Length: 445
Ligand SMILES: [Fe+2]
Ligand SMILES: [Fe+2]
Image 1 (cartoon, rainbow, N blue to C red):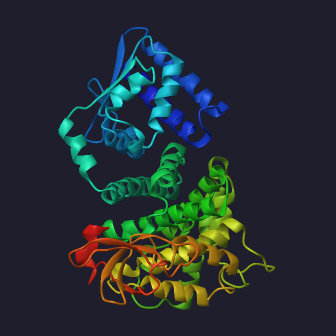
Image 2: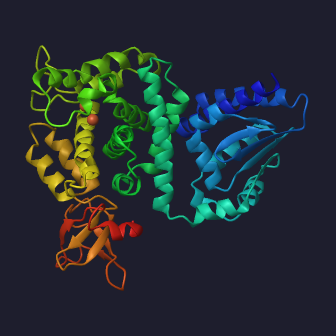
């Protein structure tokens, strides 16, 4: 009984954190979550003076208890806490609601904006009754020494694990865990958007199953990035991201034999494969109460073509929902990019060529133009060879001229940043496959 209440507290803490991230600290939904959290904390302090939460080897614990189940769901948040150097959190009786609000505000501050020691920073904002600390100083330093790209690759892998669990729940028709879902989409929204290429290069593909989940997570991240750039509200972006996450869920309901069959599919198998749109849509519809109806619409429409045709067959011609149009583009783009697993990937410039040649037929031409303005022909993190044979990493896409990004030269002795839009005489020749000739430059991403 005793520890049930601590688990309840931890769940409410994560929910309040999530609400703060979606709605900001002034919103009634955050305030309600905070009230509930505060009430639980007050009743915990009926018979003790402090509540200590430890984070040890990525598990949340209190006293003798380790909350494995909860820890797996909120791994992205645990990762955030340990990255700021927090491995021990002590709440003291006497804590006020205001201190809790300030603490959530602290948790939403980007790591690099926290000056010096986090505990001193907390004190400076007036938080007296929450003490944070490290269990092992060493580990926190290890983490801060990691490059930003490696850190993001870690966060991506944590999200991936949550994606796998969420998909499993949906396939078994279990309850959709909104807490887990919230953390995937928020983590993706807060720290992973805009770095699609980096994950493809740095995260190792551990087999067929995981590459399916990678595809789903990538489409989620890309579609949120795209819709954010298109000017959608944060809530809309999150809904589109969740729809991206589940667009191919129907595939997981089809026999693995068909999915993994080498060579071509016969007619019957092919139409079974195409039925993933309907199967997925139906399954998602039965969860519309927690996820809205959008993921179901997108699962149904994501293989419909903008210019008509595609599958499934519809009774009358229809223009897909804007969310489906966004996800169709991200879906195709990621599918082309992921061919890297076969060591014979499409170079970025080829993907750009194939997709723009198809435009006005498969994709909305207007959206496709904006998409490539945002991700560039060579996305951030791509290893490229210049026409003068030097090797460089793309650091920044130039929306005004997608063929001329800002790059960092990494071959030879002197590393330098070059804005190809300013130095018109230097041009990109082609991208390098990171599993082959580009491999030795991976460390520079
Ligand atoms: Fe699909
Ligand atoms: Fe897909």
